[in-house]
Image (cartoon, rainbow, N blue to C red; front, side):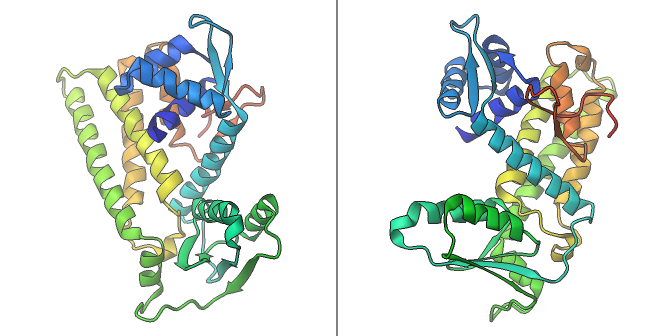
Length: 306
């Protein structure tokens, strides 16, 4: 359900506003049934992820709702951090930010929310109720504490020395705290599937007949998976804390090659799918922005400076 929701939100956010018919046509390309798409869109409208306009199937239109915009903004922040980390611009100064808390059981809901939000921000769980980050995120944490009304129950510390007996290096500490082995496996598996898609694109260049529409939607599907990895799983740590062969660098290279190759296909001129190419190209831009016309979130238009 989360994957369907994220896919719908991406498409609606890119379009700014979209008819129910167009949304149904595009999302079905990802092997989802019309009933599943309608049910997901209705749930999203009820929860504020989408705003539904008009009545009757022929007149329904959707745009991103207030809760959906929060998710878009969260992704934009994480997306920027992902690129900064890959480009070496997210340097570690040797300090750790430590967040620890003692929140009573009767406030369990806010305690659970704090944990989830810290993890989304890229903090790693050092031990029970002790979270660490190599980045200066004090301002963001203070805003979160105020939002959750947890003043007096959360403590922030800065230190240069964190040691866990049995772990001999910072690299070992990082691998355990952020469960990087699982993430590394996920990236390497993802890279293999992107390389398989790239091989299909190369066969197309050699004159073999291949369904270009199918290639487009395979590329879009892989892009959606990468976006979920970045948002949900990757803490986007500074390069100094990762191995030199960390696979997300290869991931970035492959997605760049694939998006450029797909954009050269004849289907790129099809008006029905033109905006989908903007979404693919947007993963290669180092920035994403919301249009000044306040009509939703957009990746940079084709031809924009990147």
